[in-house]
Length: 88
Image (tube, rainbow, N blue to C red; front, side, top):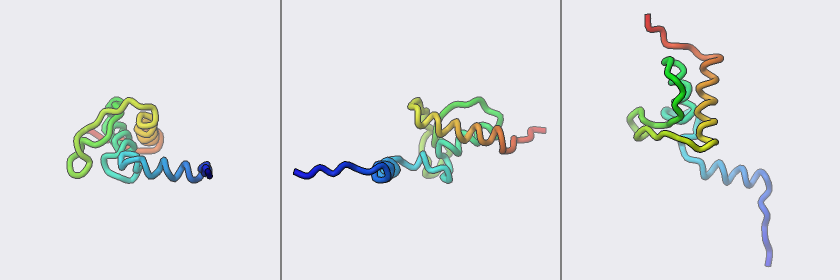
């Protein structure tokens, strides 16, 4: 019997293939996108994805570590380098 142990690169490829669209930083409604949008509009962090209509579906609140980290990456990036909505 032959057992193939996956290399680290193969493992990463499987993980990428299993992740859904909400981890695609370039996609509207993704975790990263929603984090940066919340920061832009001066909202408090509320980790979620979707909820913006179209193909992003309903708003989904997230609690798992990797999803929250992805959302906060977008939020924190906009806090540091992005712009803020001017309500004047």
